[in-house]
Image (cartoon, rainbow, N blue to C red):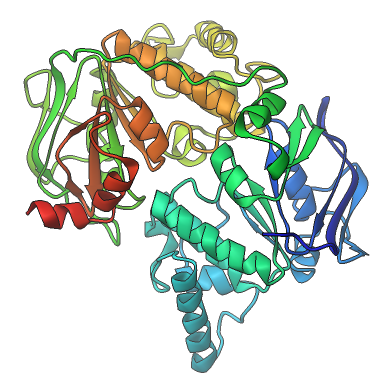
Length: 510
Protein backbone atom coordinates (compact mmCIF):
# COMPACT_ATOMS: atom_id res chain seq x y z
CA UNK A 1 0.00 0.00 0.00
CA UNK A 2 1.96 3.02 -1.20
CA UNK A 3 1.14 6.60 -0.33
CA UNK A 4 0.81 9.40 -2.86
CA UNK A 5 3.07 12.44 -3.01
CA UNK A 6 0.53 15.30 -2.96
CA UNK A 7 0.30 17.01 0.44
CA UNK A 8 -3.37 17.33 1.43
CA UNK A 9 -2.83 18.52 5.01
CA UNK A 10 -0.14 20.55 6.69
CA UNK A 11 0.13 21.53 10.36
CA UNK A 12 2.74 24.21 10.94
CA UNK A 13 4.21 24.95 14.41
CA UNK A 14 0.96 24.32 16.33
CA UNK A 15 1.17 25.49 19.94
CA UNK A 16 -1.66 25.27 22.47
CA UNK A 17 -1.60 26.07 26.21
CA UNK A 18 -4.18 25.47 28.92
CA UNK A 19 -3.07 27.77 31.70
CA UNK A 20 0.42 26.65 32.64
CA UNK A 21 0.12 23.35 30.72
CA UNK A 22 1.63 23.26 27.22
CA UNK A 23 -0.54 20.67 25.47
CA UNK A 24 1.06 21.14 22.03
CA UNK A 25 4.53 22.63 21.62
CA UNK A 26 5.31 23.85 18.06
CA UNK A 27 4.13 20.64 16.33
CA UNK A 28 4.51 20.41 12.55
CA UNK A 29 3.50 17.52 10.32
CA UNK A 30 2.11 16.84 6.85
CA UNK A 31 -0.19 14.21 5.37
CA UNK A 32 -0.11 13.10 1.75
CA UNK A 33 -2.93 11.95 -0.50
CA UNK A 34 -3.60 8.25 -0.05
CA UNK A 35 -1.49 8.01 3.11
CA UNK A 36 -2.20 6.70 6.61
CA UNK A 37 -0.33 8.33 9.48
CA UNK A 38 -0.57 6.75 12.92
CA UNK A 39 -0.45 9.22 15.81
CA UNK A 40 0.99 7.62 18.95
CA UNK A 41 1.59 8.89 22.46
CA UNK A 42 0.74 8.30 26.09
CA UNK A 43 -2.52 9.65 27.47
CA UNK A 44 -2.01 13.36 27.93
CA UNK A 45 0.71 13.53 25.24
CA UNK A 46 -1.36 16.04 23.24
CA UNK A 47 -2.85 13.87 20.47
CA UNK A 48 -6.51 14.74 21.02
CA UNK A 49 -5.72 18.45 21.51
CA UNK A 50 -3.83 18.51 18.21
CA UNK A 51 -6.68 16.79 16.37
CA UNK A 52 -9.24 19.15 17.91
CA UNK A 53 -7.20 22.09 16.60
CA UNK A 54 -7.08 20.47 13.16
CA UNK A 55 -10.84 19.93 13.24
CA UNK A 56 -11.50 23.49 14.41
CA UNK A 57 -12.84 22.64 17.86
CA UNK A 58 -9.91 24.31 19.61
CA UNK A 59 -8.06 27.46 18.55
CA UNK A 60 -4.26 27.22 18.56
CA UNK A 61 -2.31 29.94 20.38
CA UNK A 62 0.04 29.98 17.39
CA UNK A 63 0.62 28.04 14.18
CA UNK A 64 -1.64 27.20 11.24
CA UNK A 65 -3.58 24.39 9.55
CA UNK A 66 -3.82 24.11 5.76
CA UNK A 67 -5.93 21.67 3.70
CA UNK A 68 -5.18 21.35 -0.02
CA UNK A 69 -2.94 24.40 0.29
CA UNK A 70 -5.66 26.61 1.80
CA UNK A 71 -5.17 27.87 5.36
CA UNK A 72 -8.21 27.15 7.52
CA UNK A 73 -9.66 29.87 9.76
CA UNK A 74 -8.82 28.84 13.37
CA UNK A 75 -11.50 27.42 15.62
CA UNK A 76 -14.00 26.80 12.82
CA UNK A 77 -15.29 23.22 12.55
CA UNK A 78 -17.60 24.16 9.69
CA UNK A 79 -14.61 25.35 7.65
CA UNK A 80 -12.77 22.09 8.40
CA UNK A 81 -15.79 20.03 7.32
CA UNK A 82 -16.23 22.05 4.14
CA UNK A 83 -12.53 21.56 3.37
CA UNK A 84 -13.10 17.80 3.59
CA UNK A 85 -11.84 16.94 7.09
CA UNK A 86 -13.90 14.35 8.98
CA UNK A 87 -13.29 13.22 12.55
CA UNK A 88 -14.54 10.24 14.52
CA UNK A 89 -14.07 11.16 18.17
CA UNK A 90 -13.15 8.70 20.90
CA UNK A 91 -15.90 10.26 23.01
CA UNK A 92 -18.93 10.64 20.83
CA UNK A 93 -20.71 13.78 19.66
CA UNK A 94 -24.23 12.51 19.00
CA UNK A 95 -27.74 13.73 19.86
CA UNK A 96 -29.36 11.01 22.00
CA UNK A 97 -32.94 12.09 21.21
CA UNK A 98 -32.48 11.81 17.43
CA UNK A 99 -32.40 8.79 15.14
CA UNK A 100 -29.26 7.31 13.61
CA UNK A 101 -30.18 8.77 10.21
CA UNK A 102 -30.89 12.23 11.65
CA UNK A 103 -27.52 12.24 13.42
CA UNK A 104 -25.66 11.20 10.29
CA UNK A 105 -27.34 13.73 8.00
CA UNK A 106 -27.43 16.59 10.52
CA UNK A 107 -25.75 19.62 9.00
CA UNK A 108 -25.56 18.00 5.57
CA UNK A 109 -29.19 17.37 4.55
CA UNK A 110 -32.20 19.47 5.66
CA UNK A 111 -33.99 17.95 8.67
CA UNK A 112 -37.33 18.40 6.91
CA UNK A 113 -36.19 17.14 3.51
CA UNK A 114 -38.79 15.73 1.13
CA UNK A 115 -39.40 12.00 1.37
CA UNK A 116 -37.32 11.30 -1.73
CA UNK A 117 -34.25 12.95 -0.17
CA UNK A 118 -34.76 11.04 3.07
CA UNK A 119 -35.07 7.81 1.12
CA UNK A 120 -31.88 8.57 -0.82
CA UNK A 121 -30.05 9.39 2.41
CA UNK A 122 -31.29 6.18 4.00
CA UNK A 123 -30.11 4.12 1.01
CA UNK A 124 -26.68 5.75 1.14
CA UNK A 125 -26.36 5.10 4.87
CA UNK A 126 -27.33 1.44 4.42
CA UNK A 127 -24.86 1.09 1.53
CA UNK A 128 -22.05 2.60 3.59
CA UNK A 129 -22.97 0.46 6.60
CA UNK A 130 -22.81 -2.70 4.52
CA UNK A 131 -19.59 -1.72 2.76
CA UNK A 132 -17.80 -0.83 5.99
CA UNK A 133 -19.38 -3.62 8.08
CA UNK A 134 -20.87 -1.12 10.54
CA UNK A 135 -24.33 -2.52 11.22
CA UNK A 136 -26.79 -0.03 12.71
CA UNK A 137 -30.48 0.64 12.00
CA UNK A 138 -31.16 4.11 10.50
CA UNK A 139 -34.39 4.49 12.52
CA UNK A 140 -32.94 3.53 15.91
CA UNK A 141 -32.83 6.31 18.51
CA UNK A 142 -29.19 6.99 19.37
CA UNK A 143 -29.98 7.21 23.10
CA UNK A 144 -30.92 3.52 23.07
CA UNK A 145 -27.67 2.36 21.42
CA UNK A 146 -24.69 0.73 23.09
CA UNK A 147 -21.27 2.39 23.12
CA UNK A 148 -20.14 0.17 20.24
CA UNK A 149 -23.18 1.02 18.13
CA UNK A 150 -22.65 4.73 18.80
CA UNK A 151 -19.10 4.46 17.50
CA UNK A 152 -20.41 2.87 14.31
CA UNK A 153 -22.76 5.82 13.89
CA UNK A 154 -19.83 8.22 14.32
CA UNK A 155 -17.83 6.43 11.62
CA UNK A 156 -20.83 6.44 9.28
CA UNK A 157 -21.40 10.12 10.04
CA UNK A 158 -17.87 10.87 8.83
CA UNK A 159 -18.11 8.57 5.80
CA UNK A 160 -21.42 10.15 4.74
CA UNK A 161 -19.57 13.40 3.98
CA UNK A 162 -17.15 12.89 1.08
CA UNK A 163 -14.08 13.81 3.10
CA UNK A 164 -10.48 14.04 1.89
CA UNK A 165 -8.97 13.56 5.36
CA UNK A 166 -10.44 11.25 8.00
CA UNK A 167 -9.27 11.34 11.62
CA UNK A 168 -9.98 8.07 13.43
CA UNK A 169 -9.58 8.12 17.22
CA UNK A 170 -9.45 4.53 18.55
CA UNK A 171 -11.81 3.25 15.80
CA UNK A 172 -11.46 -0.47 16.57
CA UNK A 173 -12.01 -0.32 20.33
CA UNK A 174 -15.41 -2.02 20.06
CA UNK A 175 -14.90 -4.32 17.05
CA UNK A 176 -14.24 -8.07 16.92
CA UNK A 177 -10.99 -9.23 15.26
CA UNK A 178 -12.97 -10.18 12.17
CA UNK A 179 -14.70 -6.78 12.05
CA UNK A 180 -11.36 -5.01 12.49
CA UNK A 181 -9.94 -6.99 9.57
CA UNK A 182 -12.97 -6.05 7.46
CA UNK A 183 -12.68 -2.37 8.42
CA UNK A 184 -8.97 -2.32 7.58
CA UNK A 185 -9.64 -3.95 4.22
CA UNK A 186 -12.20 -1.27 3.41
CA UNK A 187 -9.94 1.54 4.65
CA UNK A 188 -7.19 0.24 2.38
CA UNK A 189 -9.60 0.42 -0.55
CA UNK A 190 -10.56 3.98 0.38
CA UNK A 191 -6.90 4.98 0.77
CA UNK A 192 -6.09 3.47 -2.61
CA UNK A 193 -8.75 5.75 -4.13
CA UNK A 194 -7.23 8.85 -2.50
CA UNK A 195 -8.55 9.13 1.08
CA UNK A 196 -5.94 10.22 3.65
CA UNK A 197 -6.20 9.04 7.26
CA UNK A 198 -4.81 10.05 10.64
CA UNK A 199 -5.14 6.91 12.77
CA UNK A 200 -4.97 7.20 16.57
CA UNK A 201 -4.64 3.88 18.36
CA UNK A 202 -2.84 2.33 21.30
CA UNK A 203 -2.85 -1.09 19.62
CA UNK A 204 0.62 -1.26 18.10
CA UNK A 205 -0.13 -4.31 15.95
CA UNK A 206 -2.92 -2.30 14.29
CA UNK A 207 -0.58 0.63 13.72
CA UNK A 208 1.92 -1.69 12.03
CA UNK A 209 -0.85 -3.21 9.91
CA UNK A 210 -2.53 -0.05 8.60
CA UNK A 211 -0.12 2.93 8.74
CA UNK A 212 2.57 4.09 6.32
CA UNK A 213 4.20 6.40 8.86
CA UNK A 214 4.11 6.78 12.63
CA UNK A 215 4.33 10.14 14.42
CA UNK A 216 5.01 10.00 18.17
CA UNK A 217 4.10 12.75 20.66
CA UNK A 218 5.39 12.94 24.22
CA UNK A 219 4.57 15.69 26.72
CA UNK A 220 3.12 17.83 23.94
CA UNK A 221 6.14 17.60 21.63
CA UNK A 222 6.74 15.64 18.44
CA UNK A 223 9.60 13.35 19.46
CA UNK A 224 9.75 10.85 16.62
CA UNK A 225 8.63 10.07 13.09
CA UNK A 226 9.33 6.79 11.32
CA UNK A 227 8.07 4.67 8.41
CA UNK A 228 6.36 1.50 9.66
CA UNK A 229 8.51 -0.62 7.34
CA UNK A 230 11.57 0.67 9.25
CA UNK A 231 10.36 -0.05 12.80
CA UNK A 232 8.62 -2.60 15.02
CA UNK A 233 6.28 -2.67 18.02
CA UNK A 234 9.10 -2.74 20.58
CA UNK A 235 10.79 0.34 19.11
CA UNK A 236 7.48 2.21 18.92
CA UNK A 237 6.67 1.35 22.54
CA UNK A 238 10.06 2.62 23.69
CA UNK A 239 9.64 5.82 21.65
CA UNK A 240 6.22 6.43 23.23
CA UNK A 241 7.37 5.83 26.79
CA UNK A 242 10.68 7.68 26.44
CA UNK A 243 12.77 4.69 27.47
CA UNK A 244 12.52 0.93 27.67
CA UNK A 245 9.67 -1.01 26.10
CA UNK A 246 6.55 -1.18 28.29
CA UNK A 247 6.09 -4.75 29.49
CA UNK A 248 2.76 -6.36 30.28
CA UNK A 249 2.38 -7.78 33.81
CA UNK A 250 2.85 -11.50 34.32
CA UNK A 251 -0.40 -13.45 34.70
CA UNK A 252 0.04 -16.36 37.08
CA UNK A 253 -2.39 -19.22 37.52
CA UNK A 254 -4.41 -19.28 40.75
CA UNK A 255 -6.84 -21.59 42.46
CA UNK A 256 -10.18 -19.78 42.84
CA UNK A 257 -12.00 -19.70 46.15
CA UNK A 258 -15.70 -19.76 46.98
CA UNK A 259 -18.45 -18.12 44.92
CA UNK A 260 -18.99 -14.53 46.10
CA UNK A 261 -21.83 -13.87 43.65
CA UNK A 262 -23.91 -16.17 41.47
CA UNK A 263 -26.50 -15.57 38.78
CA UNK A 264 -28.82 -18.57 38.47
CA UNK A 265 -30.96 -18.61 35.35
CA UNK A 266 -31.25 -14.82 35.30
CA UNK A 267 -33.25 -13.13 32.54
CA UNK A 268 -34.03 -9.44 32.06
CA UNK A 269 -36.32 -7.71 29.54
CA UNK A 270 -34.99 -6.05 26.41
CA UNK A 271 -34.77 -2.24 26.58
CA UNK A 272 -35.29 -0.71 23.16
CA UNK A 273 -32.80 -2.33 20.79
CA UNK A 274 -30.61 -3.50 23.67
CA UNK A 275 -31.04 -7.20 24.47
CA UNK A 276 -31.66 -8.36 27.99
CA UNK A 277 -30.16 -11.45 29.56
CA UNK A 278 -31.46 -14.86 28.45
CA UNK A 279 -31.33 -17.47 31.24
CA UNK A 280 -27.78 -16.52 32.30
CA UNK A 281 -25.93 -18.60 34.87
CA UNK A 282 -22.45 -17.64 36.06
CA UNK A 283 -20.33 -17.61 39.20
CA UNK A 284 -17.93 -14.89 40.36
CA UNK A 285 -15.39 -16.60 42.59
CA UNK A 286 -12.84 -15.21 45.01
CA UNK A 287 -9.34 -14.94 43.51
CA UNK A 288 -10.53 -15.27 39.91
CA UNK A 289 -10.90 -12.99 36.89
CA UNK A 290 -13.94 -13.94 34.83
CA UNK A 291 -13.70 -12.42 31.36
CA UNK A 292 -16.81 -11.58 29.36
CA UNK A 293 -16.13 -11.31 25.62
CA UNK A 294 -18.62 -10.08 23.05
CA UNK A 295 -19.44 -7.49 20.44
CA UNK A 296 -20.79 -4.35 22.10
CA UNK A 297 -24.56 -4.29 22.49
CA UNK A 298 -25.14 -7.99 23.14
CA UNK A 299 -26.27 -7.87 26.75
CA UNK A 300 -23.11 -6.70 28.52
CA UNK A 301 -24.94 -3.59 29.79
CA UNK A 302 -27.76 -5.67 31.27
CA UNK A 303 -25.31 -7.99 33.03
CA UNK A 304 -23.29 -5.07 34.41
CA UNK A 305 -26.46 -3.41 35.69
CA UNK A 306 -27.59 -6.59 37.47
CA UNK A 307 -24.19 -7.08 39.11
CA UNK A 308 -23.95 -3.39 40.06
CA UNK A 309 -27.45 -3.12 41.55
CA UNK A 310 -28.89 -0.91 38.81
CA UNK A 311 -31.29 -3.61 37.62
CA UNK A 312 -33.09 -6.48 39.34
CA UNK A 313 -33.44 -9.87 37.62
CA UNK A 314 -36.74 -10.23 35.78
CA UNK A 315 -36.56 -13.93 36.52
CA UNK A 316 -33.98 -16.21 38.05
CA UNK A 317 -31.98 -15.57 41.20
CA UNK A 318 -29.07 -13.35 42.21
CA UNK A 319 -27.10 -14.84 45.11
CA UNK A 320 -24.57 -12.83 47.12
CA UNK A 321 -22.44 -14.62 49.72
CA UNK A 322 -24.72 -17.68 49.60
CA UNK A 323 -28.02 -15.80 50.02
CA UNK A 324 -30.27 -13.64 47.79
CA UNK A 325 -30.02 -9.96 48.87
CA UNK A 326 -33.23 -8.62 50.40
CA UNK A 327 -32.80 -5.31 48.54
CA UNK A 328 -30.78 -4.58 45.42
CA UNK A 329 -29.88 -1.01 44.48
CA UNK A 330 -26.54 0.62 43.57
CA UNK A 331 -26.18 1.75 47.19
CA UNK A 332 -26.84 -1.82 48.40
CA UNK A 333 -24.18 -3.08 45.98
CA UNK A 334 -21.59 -0.57 47.25
CA UNK A 335 -22.48 -1.42 50.84
CA UNK A 336 -22.01 -5.14 50.11
CA UNK A 337 -18.47 -4.66 48.77
CA UNK A 338 -19.11 -4.36 45.03
CA UNK A 339 -17.09 -1.71 43.21
CA UNK A 340 -17.38 -0.79 39.56
CA UNK A 341 -15.17 0.67 36.88
CA UNK A 342 -17.96 1.88 34.55
CA UNK A 343 -18.00 1.50 30.78
CA UNK A 344 -18.08 5.23 30.06
CA UNK A 345 -15.81 7.19 32.40
CA UNK A 346 -17.26 10.49 31.14
CA UNK A 347 -20.97 9.69 31.23
CA UNK A 348 -21.32 7.38 34.23
CA UNK A 349 -17.92 7.26 35.92
CA UNK A 350 -17.38 10.90 36.81
CA UNK A 351 -19.12 14.27 37.03
CA UNK A 352 -17.14 16.50 34.69
CA UNK A 353 -17.51 19.79 36.60
CA UNK A 354 -16.69 18.20 39.97
CA UNK A 355 -13.07 18.30 41.09
CA UNK A 356 -10.96 15.23 41.83
CA UNK A 357 -11.81 15.26 45.54
CA UNK A 358 -15.55 15.26 44.86
CA UNK A 359 -15.21 12.52 42.24
CA UNK A 360 -13.02 10.42 44.53
CA UNK A 361 -15.85 10.07 47.10
CA UNK A 362 -18.83 9.91 44.71
CA UNK A 363 -19.92 6.43 45.74
CA UNK A 364 -18.92 6.65 49.44
CA UNK A 365 -19.68 10.20 50.52
CA UNK A 366 -22.48 9.11 52.90
CA UNK A 367 -20.29 6.77 54.91
CA UNK A 368 -17.30 7.01 57.21
CA UNK A 369 -14.79 8.59 57.09
CA UNK A 370 -16.27 11.09 54.66
CA UNK A 371 -19.40 12.14 56.55
CA UNK A 372 -20.77 12.26 60.06
CA UNK A 373 -24.32 13.18 61.13
CA UNK A 374 -25.06 14.50 57.63
CA UNK A 375 -21.93 16.70 57.41
CA UNK A 376 -19.21 16.04 54.87
CA UNK A 377 -15.66 15.78 56.18
CA UNK A 378 -13.83 17.61 53.40
CA UNK A 379 -10.47 17.23 55.10
CA UNK A 380 -10.80 13.42 55.00
CA UNK A 381 -12.07 13.56 51.41
CA UNK A 382 -9.14 15.73 50.31
CA UNK A 383 -6.68 13.43 52.08
CA UNK A 384 -8.24 10.42 50.29
CA UNK A 385 -8.00 12.16 46.89
CA UNK A 386 -4.37 13.14 47.53
CA UNK A 387 -3.54 9.51 48.43
CA UNK A 388 -5.10 8.26 45.18
CA UNK A 389 -3.26 10.92 43.15
CA UNK A 390 0.07 9.89 44.65
CA UNK A 391 -0.42 6.12 44.79
CA UNK A 392 -1.96 5.76 41.33
CA UNK A 393 0.17 8.41 39.61
CA UNK A 394 -2.76 10.61 38.59
CA UNK A 395 -1.05 13.42 36.68
CA UNK A 396 -2.89 16.64 37.45
CA UNK A 397 -2.30 20.09 38.99
CA UNK A 398 -3.98 19.00 42.22
CA UNK A 399 -7.06 17.53 43.90
CA UNK A 400 -9.07 20.71 43.29
CA UNK A 401 -8.75 20.32 39.49
CA UNK A 402 -12.00 19.77 37.59
CA UNK A 403 -11.83 16.20 36.35
CA UNK A 404 -12.86 17.11 32.78
CA UNK A 405 -9.42 18.73 32.38
CA UNK A 406 -7.65 15.38 32.83
CA UNK A 407 -6.65 13.02 30.03
CA UNK A 408 -8.60 9.78 29.69
CA UNK A 409 -5.79 7.76 31.27
CA UNK A 410 -5.50 9.96 34.34
CA UNK A 411 -9.28 10.03 34.74
CA UNK A 412 -9.26 6.23 34.65
CA UNK A 413 -6.49 6.08 37.26
CA UNK A 414 -8.60 8.15 39.66
CA UNK A 415 -11.58 5.82 39.14
CA UNK A 416 -9.31 2.80 39.64
CA UNK A 417 -7.95 4.22 42.88
CA UNK A 418 -11.47 5.05 44.08
CA UNK A 419 -12.46 1.43 43.42
CA UNK A 420 -9.44 -0.42 44.77
CA UNK A 421 -8.90 1.66 47.91
CA UNK A 422 -12.34 0.53 49.10
CA UNK A 423 -10.94 -3.07 49.28
CA UNK A 424 -13.97 -4.49 47.40
CA UNK A 425 -15.03 -8.13 47.41
CA UNK A 426 -16.19 -7.94 43.79
CA UNK A 427 -14.87 -5.64 41.06
CA UNK A 428 -17.00 -4.96 37.99
CA UNK A 429 -14.40 -3.80 35.43
CA UNK A 430 -16.35 -2.69 32.35
CA UNK A 431 -14.00 -1.72 29.48
CA UNK A 432 -11.34 -0.70 32.04
CA UNK A 433 -8.61 0.21 29.53
CA UNK A 434 -10.61 1.55 26.57
CA UNK A 435 -8.64 4.39 24.97
CA UNK A 436 -5.65 4.10 27.31
CA UNK A 437 -2.00 4.07 26.26
CA UNK A 438 0.13 0.97 26.72
CA UNK A 439 1.67 2.17 29.97
CA UNK A 440 -1.72 2.93 31.51
CA UNK A 441 -3.11 -0.39 30.20
CA UNK A 442 -0.32 -2.34 31.89
CA UNK A 443 -0.86 -0.39 35.11
CA UNK A 444 -4.62 -1.04 35.21
CA UNK A 445 -4.07 -4.72 34.42
CA UNK A 446 -1.44 -5.07 37.16
CA UNK A 447 -3.84 -3.54 39.70
CA UNK A 448 -6.69 -5.88 38.69
CA UNK A 449 -4.36 -8.88 38.96
CA UNK A 450 -3.20 -7.71 42.40
CA UNK A 451 -6.84 -7.37 43.51
CA UNK A 452 -7.51 -10.91 42.25
CA UNK A 453 -4.46 -12.21 44.11
CA UNK A 454 -5.77 -10.55 47.30
CA UNK A 455 -8.97 -12.58 46.95
CA UNK A 456 -11.34 -10.30 45.04
CA UNK A 457 -13.59 -11.63 42.29
CA UNK A 458 -13.18 -9.62 39.09
CA UNK A 459 -15.75 -9.50 36.30
CA UNK A 460 -13.84 -8.15 33.28
CA UNK A 461 -16.11 -6.98 30.45
CA UNK A 462 -14.20 -6.08 27.31
CA UNK A 463 -14.55 -6.09 23.54
CA UNK A 464 -10.75 -6.37 23.26
CA UNK A 465 -10.08 -10.07 22.83
CA UNK A 466 -6.36 -9.62 23.48
CA UNK A 467 -7.22 -8.23 26.91
CA UNK A 468 -9.76 -10.97 27.65
CA UNK A 469 -7.57 -13.89 26.56
CA UNK A 470 -4.47 -12.65 28.38
CA UNK A 471 -6.00 -11.59 31.69
CA UNK A 472 -8.97 -13.90 32.33
CA UNK A 473 -8.86 -17.16 34.26
CA UNK A 474 -12.23 -18.16 32.81
CA UNK A 475 -13.84 -16.73 29.65
CA UNK A 476 -17.53 -16.57 28.77
CA UNK A 477 -18.86 -15.13 25.51
CA UNK A 478 -22.11 -13.17 25.43
CA UNK A 479 -24.21 -12.89 22.27
CA UNK A 480 -27.77 -11.53 22.09
CA UNK A 481 -28.05 -11.93 25.86
CA UNK A 482 -27.01 -15.61 25.82
CA UNK A 483 -23.95 -16.82 27.72
CA UNK A 484 -21.54 -19.45 26.43
CA UNK A 485 -20.03 -22.14 28.64
CA UNK A 486 -16.95 -21.07 30.57
CA UNK A 487 -13.62 -21.65 28.82
CA UNK A 488 -10.34 -21.83 30.72
CA UNK A 489 -7.58 -19.44 29.62
CA UNK A 490 -5.94 -20.84 26.49
CA UNK A 491 -8.74 -23.33 25.78
CA UNK A 492 -10.10 -21.33 22.82
CA UNK A 493 -8.20 -19.29 20.24
CA UNK A 494 -9.30 -15.70 19.48
CA UNK A 495 -10.73 -16.94 16.18
CA UNK A 496 -12.77 -19.62 17.97
CA UNK A 497 -14.04 -17.06 20.48
CA UNK A 498 -14.90 -14.81 17.53
CA UNK A 499 -17.21 -17.55 16.21
CA UNK A 500 -19.07 -17.54 19.53
CA UNK A 501 -19.14 -13.72 19.50
CA UNK A 502 -20.86 -13.87 16.12
CA UNK A 503 -23.48 -16.20 17.66
CA UNK A 504 -22.52 -19.31 15.68
CA UNK A 505 -21.18 -21.32 18.59
CA UNK A 506 -24.56 -21.17 20.32
CA UNK A 507 -26.26 -22.77 17.34
CA UNK A 508 -23.64 -25.53 17.18
CA UNK A 509 -24.01 -26.18 20.93
CA UNK A 510 -27.82 -26.39 20.90
